[in-house]
Image 1 (cartoon, rainbow, N blue to C red):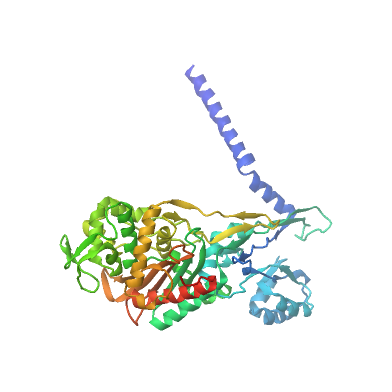
Image 2: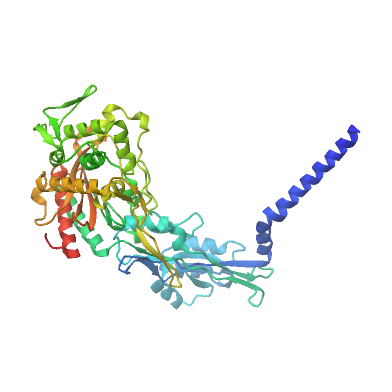
Length: 557
């Protein structure tokens, strides 16, 4: 009986393995086997899809396609390979020997010579009337505005198979939408591998990529880029960045970083230039972070604008002493004046009133340590330590923006929550998507959550207006406008300590304060004329703001 069961079990195992094997070949490998079988009888050509355009908010193109061609050769039609190689190499800027070697390889029926050849050069090649030389349409990306918004746009390069692929910025993030879907032409072939033109054919038309309309305003972008370059030169900074956002929708109106590059000739630039400093870079925000801590203090009713704080000297936290930035002490100081005079000592008192849980709420509530969700490829979420890793001194220094790393896009988004009444919005670059049939898909603004109440946001706005009107940068502010803002100066950590001579100067603010049209963050890395944000980033912010008031037709109040 046992022997019968063993035999029966072996039969079951055998048939089970047979079923699994049949399933593998007939189901799992069926597509691949069909392709392999088809390759024996058919020759397949790719019909490339047209990549979608990228348009500014006014519908003008930032990126579109330019007529270009793939130049190829059919060796069997060429009677004199050395002569062919000599004539073609001169116009395609290729080595004659390389062409000759490729064309002389046994069995080659089709040899690609050069990609993305301009139409004018193709015309010259056609004039040679060379047998065996052919061309296929292969559009290439064109950037009518040259390097404008390069970090935002990104560029198109090649993947490992030589196919177009978007990298960085919008081109990278929306590569699938922009790229579309290639088609296919399959022709029956003869024993020599040549297509039989009267044979069986199969054609799948390509699906062109969709076009993207951005929130970006070309005029604002041009203002920002020009003023940023001027500011870097004036203040002797190594690098700089500016982002302008609509605080109500999260739409990115302008974004610029220096150094930058030209997407049309990206290969000529160092790869470090491709990185967008506004979304992929992090920095310590310094005193600009104070407005967020103060906002949470107001919202939790632990401070009011008129509440007094003691500022009689350095404050002790554990074994450390925290001083004011200018080492001046004013005795008793109101919470509004804590922002006006950018008092580190006053901010430590706010942090103590908020407590550990309240300070952690500032960091998490305003979106730090999290992705903002911006639709750009290379966003880096700043690393924030685990809740239980924050010591007393860490929370104290975080109250004035030291010892915490944020990205510029996180910072401008957080301050936008004060500007718009307390809502943390998702920053967006693309406003709508259009397909070839004219269908428009709008991308609606997305709110992550409420961070503070509208009433608290109004209180903070007035405190930030006071910081501008009575603060260190009041001399640079445009007259007649209510601007809410805050300066920041953060020392750059080097090898485990802070370098007094190397700073990141910044200014963040929004205007007009009563109904904000824009929120803007300006950063300058290592300015040499002065290390202070009040003397570098703030005047640059106000210069750009003046231009924006003029452009938007906003009159002095």
